[in-house]
Length: 51
Image (cartoon, rainbow, N blue to C red):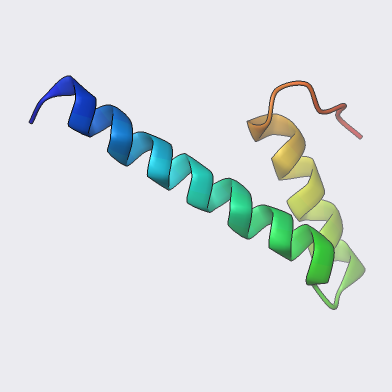
């Protein structure tokens, strides 16, 4: 595998994870699940303040 392919795979996995967490933080029924998703997003996305 080339380094470009590995980078692409990593970017797709990262993007999918962030997207799933953003959807969970927005639409989850339980407030604890929304809170946990928001705190995980704060760790993964640079520039977001940590709660």
